[in-house]
Each structure stands twice: as structure tokens, then as C-alpha cells.
Length: 296
Image 1: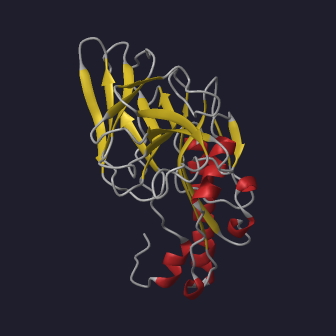
Image 2: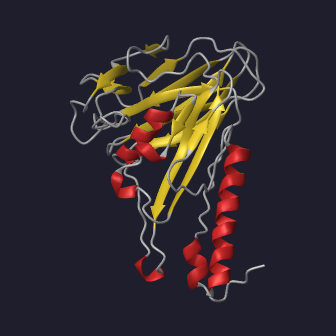
């Protein structure tokens, strides 16, 4: 590639960075190029909610191209530092291994939203949610690893692992297919609302987790998941129906044995559309190493 084309591409990257940042910094930011710092911020009385984040580091030589991935712990640390803040500088909280000495690339999906009553991290209590059970299988708040081996989380979703979550404790006398409900208080409706949460379903006897939205007249099953999903936390977002004042209910169904603990953490309800994360990477290295690529 000749020198003039390299200069043109560098100017194009700079223009795209400035334009993208100015256009998106109050709502949804994606494919942002970082040099020294990148600040995301929200206006008014709304705060940041990061949905997804990914970092890459690469030199100019394609033969040496490598990904610079964040661990789950590192990504959660960034989310915790930025979530519920009005402004956040991303580059200062990316670990040293992923700082950008020459070229770098970060994709951030976030929204600026007001938090709705019913959101809960379970750090101090269960935030007005109630537990219902007909037996000895029930939701219970916990810190650290479950007392039962080969089931349940080792830790919560925070970077330190010292936080709390809520899980389905299965006492020895509990039976297969027992159910326990985690029910929110009454939540005010909005034409656009999104429910997000993290869930953990690890154990060879895991059965089913369901999520419902209900009022006095109707019940909507929004989502369900079954079977062993491995020893990891998963993120889920669900669009809510505009049905007037309503409640959210998480229903866990016990499997045939004690290896069936289901956990939930960081429930959030916001007055916004759910963001569908579609991250697309198109780096300068692709221009350098793909001679068949036509530049218009």
C-alpha cells in the first residue's frame, strides 16, 4: 500500500471516530477507536448501563495480529465502575494488558436509562421481591460458593466475587419438580421497557428457569431455559409488554436431585428498548492484508 493511501485511511479512521463519538455518546456506542481516552456519558438524570464490551489490540503487521480479550472478571469490573454513573472514562479502567500503545479497538454497547423500581443487585437485601414456595425448595440470598458441590455459582457477578446473588436452595427433603417463585413488587408501566438479568444454571440435575410478566388479568411467559448450562453466568435481556401496572416473576423448577441449583443476579428494569448487541469489527489490518478488497 502506498504512503498516500495510508494517510488517507488514517484520516478516515480519525473522522469516523470523532463523528461516531459525537453522534452516539448519549445512547448507543459501537466500534469506537480509542487512542488515549474515550468518555461515555449520559444527560439529565439518566445513568450508564453497559450491555456488552470487547477489546482488541493489534500491531500494523497482519502476521502478528492477535486479539486482546478481556476476562469475564475484567469486563465485569469495567461495567461495575461505569454502570449507574453519568460519565465514565473507559481507557483508564481497561487492564494494562489491553491498553493501546499503537493501535487499538474497543466496542461498547450501552444505554442511558432511568432505573425502574424492581431492579436489584441483592447486595444489601432482596429489594422488596418476595419468595413463594410450597416445600423446602426456595429462593435464598447468598454470598460466595454454594455449600453443595458441582452445582450453583462459585461467586456472584462482581469483579471481586464478594457480592451477593439469589439462588434456589434445595434442602434434603425437597422433591423433584417442586417450584419456587421470586416475585417483584408492583412496577409502573412504560411504552418501552426492558428487563435484564444474569442467570447461572450449573448442575447435572438442573431443570428449568422461567420468567413471567403478570397483572391481575394476564400472564405472559417471556422466556425459559432448561438443563445444565455449565459453570458460568449468562446475560439475558427481555422486552416487556405495556399492560399497565405489573409484576415480574422468576419461577425455578427443581430437578431430580440436589445438583439443581439455579441462581440470578443484577436484575434491572429500564424505560428503554432492549439493545441487541451486534458488534462488527473492521480494522485497518484488513486493508493492509486483503489485496482483493476494493476501496471506494
